[in-house]
Length: 619
Image 1 (cartoon, one colour):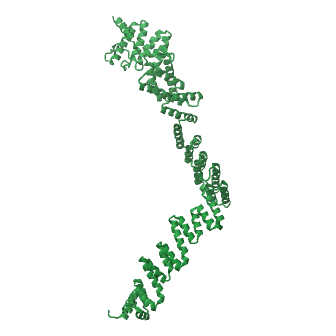
Image 2 (cartoon, rainbow, N blue to C red):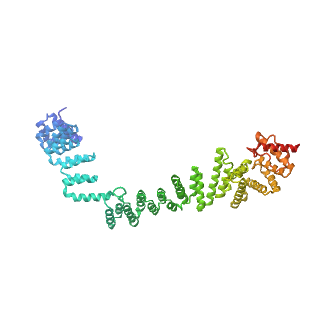
């Protein structure tokens, strides 16, 4: 403001630093009006260059050109370059191109257009000002095309750049051998042998081509070179379903991998074993896979493979020392056999209970009996198993009859039940006490008609024989229970009563059959103690009629009078009218037992005849 430029320049240099001195120099140039006068004056003060630099840094390129054109022409190229960069930032690319050319920097103009992917402009500038860059432009386009996976375009760019080798490398890296061969045949025929060898080697390495001998040769070479890890990898390359269908060849190659691992690369054995085992499973060689896993101490995996392959015997052998695995094999085997409905296989494997369970769940009782008969003949199933399922069959018979609410075949269910139990052996008392209880109730609870059915029908066992068989059955059950029980008292309290009720009934039949009337009466009287097991009307009728036949009139009257009271109570469904005073001294007789659900003697004429006889004795 005071036109004291010399002082301002001195202060700027002394106290303001480089930037301040440049700013003052530029301001002084503007004060002088620019042009030659300003540039000459600033040059004498050594301020021309700082003024120009400040002008360019400030974007005042016209002033910079004006100051430099006469006094500092060598600086013009640098100013053009900075101006070009400024224009590029402003996206004024055409103007920037002109400035790059004026700065003798065509390469920067080319890079600018490449950056903008303006390939036509880049090629135009390169062709005119830097022909050596034309190839680079094509290569850059090719690399971008590769990134975009446009390999055909990349190939074209490489070829336009005169670089077919780069196109070949691209296809080799991509393992696109067809295009690699095409490039070689057309543009690089001298590399044809090399590319064919590369293709073969690559396919061997990938396990997608080559014969067994190819892999063996390559693996052996690597072994000789002590490159064991690479040899193992080569032996593992072939896989089923790629180029190999011959499983024997595959197993040989994989076996070599295991061999080398065991001998020279033990730290890889477990991993290689698992890989080879999985491939053996793929070709369904389950036992070899399991053996390999077993060698690698992978017991669980070995068992899993054997289960998958249904190699049950081998699986049981391996799993036998571990309870958890043994259970796993058993469960898997059972599920498999159930799914396959293969009872014979289950039995052959010593799993008769599983086979029987399967038939029980299906309700195939007839088939179960047939299978059990076969097992009994061949003696290939433990007796306790046969006995248990004989008990289950009897329970099923009873359940079926109850569901149908019908006495099938007039007592034939009990006959069949006893026959089954005698054939296959009775099950344990502790597990089937209720079954024995029901069986006794059923047999001893038969009415007169059901007892006599066997005498008229040759296909039905005689009731007397059925009772005798039941007595034998119960005696054997009780004896066996006492022999195997840790405590003799462990036998259920009611079982002895069941046995004795059946025993005295059987004795009664024998005495009657052999006309041992006095003994028969004693058996009949004794049976009165078991009125909670045998229907009470049946007991009093039987004992009363025997006494009447033997002229024991008083006792017959007492018993048959009680019988008349019972049948009337059964008809009414009420015991309130029964008088127990006549039996007060008979402390062993259970007088307040549950009424029978049906009459033992259903013949009303026979009942009326007894009623008349009782009345006649009263008179």
